[in-house]
Image (cartoon, helix red, strand yellow):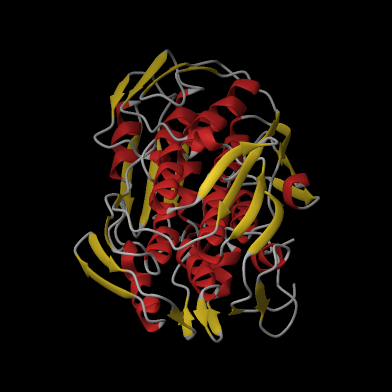
Length: 431
């Protein structure tokens, strides 16, 4: 593999124009990869982007005995996953700590083998994200856990269905419990389940494997356990967070861009906020046509679980508000510590103050190019977008974070007319 190229160099270059396909949803693809654990044989997952997180999850699955092969790129990317009859239900720490979505292998491993050993998951650093909800819910299904030496070990004879009420509609906990319940004895009901489109997409793949699931995408999911599942072919939904990122790019730089395959019904609250800010959008040709011609207007934003404004949208929205007319308050209600990128925007001249889970943004006429560092996937993408409206040159280091969630981010922005380059060699992509 070519050594990682770690910086984006961005210069303002006027409005964006053109069309761009939206690739498969990272938060769906990773869960569907984990779902392959539930049935031996060859699975095929379509619309898989060439991003680092997919590579990491493939490595994690390989440690359990699976073999993954990727071919094609972008919307044509396909991942074939061969699953053996016997699994090794132990996830090495060095893989577990690299990606937050690694926790979702716990449910399918317990369902398939009756045992699992993992360490606490890693991924982007937004503050504490305990897995207590996962463990408590699985305990209600008959799992006994032991935590020692930094590992979580679980065992059970066979999972048993029951009624599980989440205190918070956690996306990953919902995914984990749905995958656990499909092979459990009896019926499992999940109350206060997450309603994200990616949950419904995962359920769609599981149903194609022979699972019996009703209500996915609502707050009440009912799963009737079956004795066995079979391999499936499934194509993942487009990534609403990627679509939101390019919508923000249009709002910042101006212009007109068609986001092919983007689904407005997955982004209702975001699109409402963008409309209030002055970004015009209409459904068009199976996607979204976005236009921005004038100065943005400030609007208050609160992040909430779906169907609210997703926490992953927040960095791009704060970047837009930093150059909007007026004052806005952004409240982060999902992840503590999400505002850690704000200091980097301040280096570029943004006027932002934070207190607890609130940020007050006073729009300035224009940002100023500066060297900044990406602390995570979405903040890194937002800092690149900030460079589109900053005087001079902006260098965003930590580009490897962005590679975890976006395939060829610089190249796709360039296809719309942006001046965005990777420093040094050609971009390092994981495939």
